[in-house]
Image (cartoon, rainbow, N blue to C red):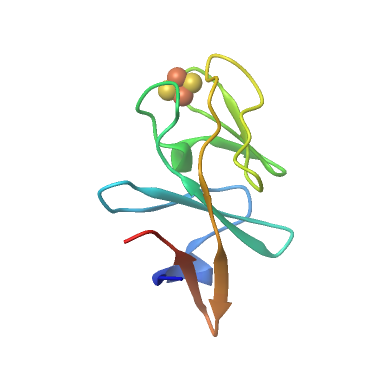
Length: 102
Ligand code: FES
């Protein structure tokens, strides 16, 4: 596992996304005090899912409103047809780490 420090727990608010900027950006969310990391780029086009609308454990893309499960990455509605990748997270102290491929 390659744990990468993503942000502080205080950077991620329930109901909001946090974008970890990198070549392939990651969107982080918190739901029920658990932290989740998924690919940030919507599989329909290029929108950032961190900028989407969060309701419970679902994020709705801000551009054309495809929905994804934050916990599993599963695509839930058109126009997207492919799920997004998910990444393991852990919290140490006040820091959130994501297991990212090199
Ligand atoms: S870019 Fe996300 S639904 Fe179109």
